[in-house]
Image 1 (cartoon, rainbow, N blue to C red):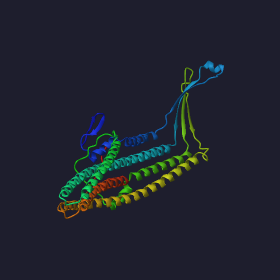
Image 2 (image 1 turned 30 degrees about the horizontal axis):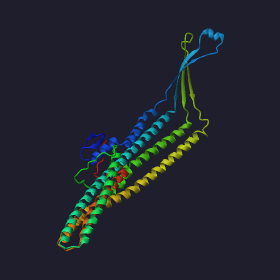
Image 3 (image 1 turned 90 degrees about the vertical axis):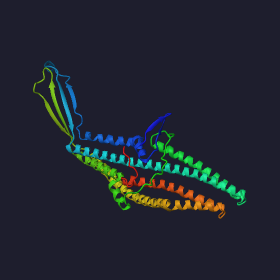
Length: 412
């Protein structure tokens, strides 16, 4: 676990930041996610109001311009209360429409959560890989210094030409440039990760010293496509929007049905009859249906058709992305295994062998440099491919809508 500490106005992680801790902090502090959550909650809270009657109206009436005889009898005053009542089925349709809207926004929030998770884990592994690459470049610098010392000692005895020493110094200069560029890239990634955490971009981030395990895919590729159609938040959101559009069309069709206005009026005052009252009922008549109701139905039908096609497009998009990302994840997973089991051990052995052979005068300086470059190039490529693998894997999990690996999901 991690905790936050304040120092000189900036917040820094006091312990090594692990992926699970990263997600907890992102879910708690990311403003974009908080905004999406609040929007979904506000629409959910509005559901009950759609099933409710509108507010009643209360009024008082006093009759003026009365005749002398009427004035002699006293003022004519009365109070009234009226209530508008829509055709009953409209309340159910409006409630259903709001429920579908709330469901759509909830699914969009869950999709946003997966999107933020993808960004957070991708940035984290980018930063982690960049930090490891920076350490490798510094180690490579030390290796070149060691090689340079070997060259200098052999040149002192006349065993190698001066060009070998010059080449060693050129390689040292080149690695200094690479370290400088890598430091700049590392700083940019740290700033981006801090921004996602809603922290000051200058805040320090402490990474674990130990190697992180390479994430493993826990579900077979053949089942991932089926999972996507059932669990994709993008598909679920569009399905809910389609339900909302269909409810809207139902409401538009019910515009042909009458609404009602109930009214109760009772006189009061000294001269008011004791048992007198009036009760009235009014009903709307869709006399302008050719202009109003038919237009509303056409509009709602067109919107429903639009959302239906958008849902169809989303399903195709999810299928395509699932296929492409699954293939990419599978390929990168195999590639990382090749690096771990073959390329890195072989390159390490080749460098050790070349270094011993050069010291003994059995190989030239160029062969030694090639072996050194090969080892560090292979190890650097491993971390670059690790970052690419996590990016593809988290993108796949966002598309599918559920976890398919042992990467943390994180809880709010």
